[in-house]
Image (cartoon, rainbow, N blue to C red; front, side, top):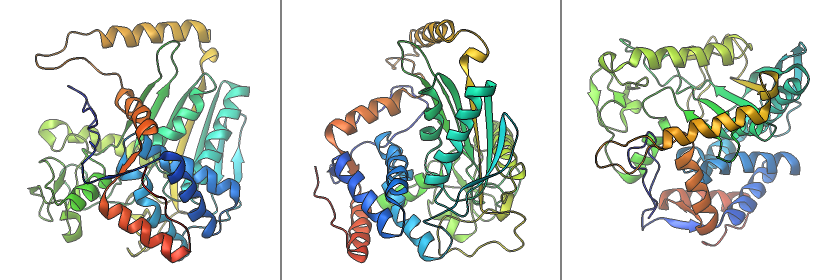
Length: 379
């Protein structure tokens, strides 16, 4: 059973005894084969698969291989280009705008993050906005690429409108995640990877598969009333900004989601607000779209552009250790650092396998049969 963090700020899925465990290398090989079957090059198929499965390894099951069928459907609908010509359409020494040519976000985002890193290596910081892309997986994967180069990494993306701003009945924002990843010395990196909603839509999808209710504060119905029905979005309901309601700070979650939308799309020329293309290929595209595709935003900040990297990482270690040693509230064992639960989950799943719900396994088997790819045996 996967340990749930005591007093933590992140809820990660525990292994259900009905779940099947799959070894990471087998799932990776399978996912690469699927992306190649839909037309991706060997390199792009590998890039996309590593980015996608990073979610499963880190316990963010809502954004991992369960979404593989969604990417295939986007290709089938002509909305995702498996062979994109990704290009820089505007740049300065420290900034760039990337056009993803309707490519998989799992391929476009790593390209753009690398541009940000290369610019930071020369100028101290690098900032890249992206237009004409698709869903890019988890933000944490992309931000962590900068950490490998002694840089602070920042990644964010907008998403289709499922979220009602505070006091609104209309859905105008996406779940719009933000990640900031910060290197340390002897300690593991600080990784804050979060949706700007109380819960991501993928968490509702998991509840639907498990036939469970949603906690109060996640969603509202079509009349703006609190609801626990995880199917509420299908009947005109909406996800709620981080905080859930005005008394608990939903206006702050709304503001954070708006910032992500502006940085990712208004700045890049992508679609924003209610015009962002939906991930499910069967959902009609918005009319009157003002931009191109989905937008992302990436940043890389070289530590030694501010102070010696060794000094910074020493003090990050000190920061992390002091927070970990904080006196916990009664009934809790320890205070966590952002990134701790995912790091522990990754080690466990690399060692013992990735759990997949029966519904996900059935979807993947159907996909394998459709494309003529062998489905892996459980671990």
